Length: 254
Image 1: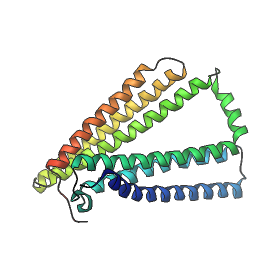
Image 2: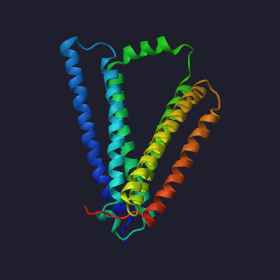
Image 3: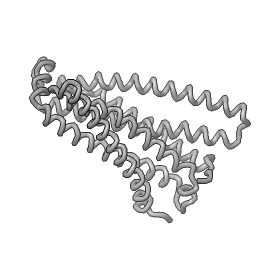
Image 4: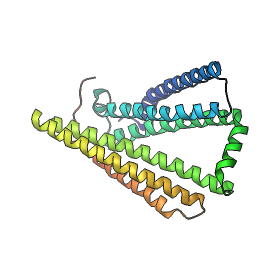
């Protein structure tokens, strides 16, 4: 039986290299943007921080997609599916490897933010004073930061389990349905996927509104309910994904 540690090490090594290449690409784009700004108008106050933040949003999106692709490849490839291990261990290890590498990527982004903040500290301090309105305590600001981080992590997990669910259902139906019905089922699944994205986006916006309750010093019970709800949906999807792997999803040649 293949051990969890050995399997995680192999999966993590591939994704670690992928995240490092993504980080290098992000650094190259940030450097190029700042050099262009320096040549065109000179570096103004706030340029470094907002440039880093803007490209970081895109980099997070790219990292999410790349890790999702790596995650999905495991489920239908002989390299992993024919190993002597259960589908539950395979699925959870695969998901955990992507999650850990996404956290690693996020930590690097935080380092970038801190460096940019040090370079633009005076500008950002003035900007925050101008928009803050009432004076918020450090504790309230920390609550908001933790709330946004938790919401982001939960949505990443839910996003991956949803993508896996659609992918595995499509793989399962393709194994036994004729071509005409296969296309119909795929269209229905993609419509369901779009609806889920809209639904998740709505709850995301609602969750961001509830983060404001944390800032205002309220308990934020609705925010916690949303987080728990997302985790419950992700757990249900993960269970269904494991069942699909055990019963219906076949491997394909590497």
